[in-house]
Image 1 (cartoon, rainbow, N blue to C red):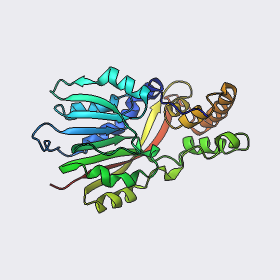
Image 2 (image 1 turned 45 degrees about the vertical axis):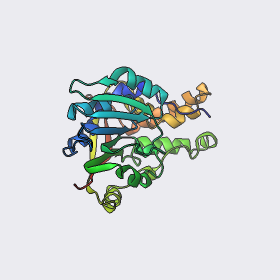
Image 3 (image 1 turned 90 degrees about the vertical axis):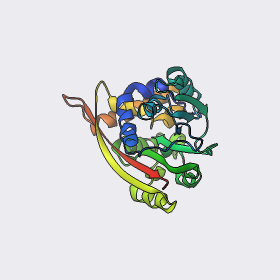
Image 4 (image 1 turned 120 degrees about the vertical axis):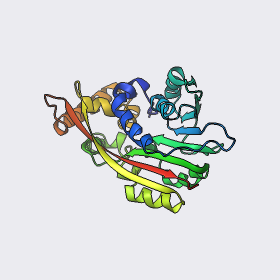
Length: 274
């Protein structure tokens, strides 16, 4: 079975829709303190991907020193090519290889942020104590995760993968609803760490265009495990994709204005009291 590689080009095909939740997230982050050494704030972006969202951090905090962490060489190559270096406001952006499942902060941070990454990290709430332990007073941990694992795009994918035709190759491969917590559980866990916490959820109605746009969307994210598992068998991959595509067409019918993809997301902003 091949590893499900991240494809920056595929992921960025819907960059504006994917960036909007991150923009909404960082808009709720309170004013950051200066670093303990008196220098501009340090920001860690966990699961930075191709760096397009990381770059948005420098618009909100132009003097900050931002480091994006990711475990995909392809994503890091794209991020470094497009976004690494000094910023117009006097800050800087760099990128480093790291696995979020084992990442431990190597220094104090004024902001640790993660955009649509933690759903890939099994047991990620267990890391919150270590991550937030690196926050200086007044500093913030903020993240958003998909909350749509019961949406047709996921349910149909799992149902087909678990069907008799595909179970031997794909059974148990895909994530279920327990990949993320409900908002109330995130609120309880973060407040128990002594953080001032704001948690909310939003369902976006993305209006997508082009042929089979929902399939095109999930190829960049949720369908990756299947793409990796069947990468060495193009005929099987085409058969699965066709079956899944037809199911998506029925679940997300095209209209004269485009195809509507409802997408629920869960947000959390947790700040260490000063």
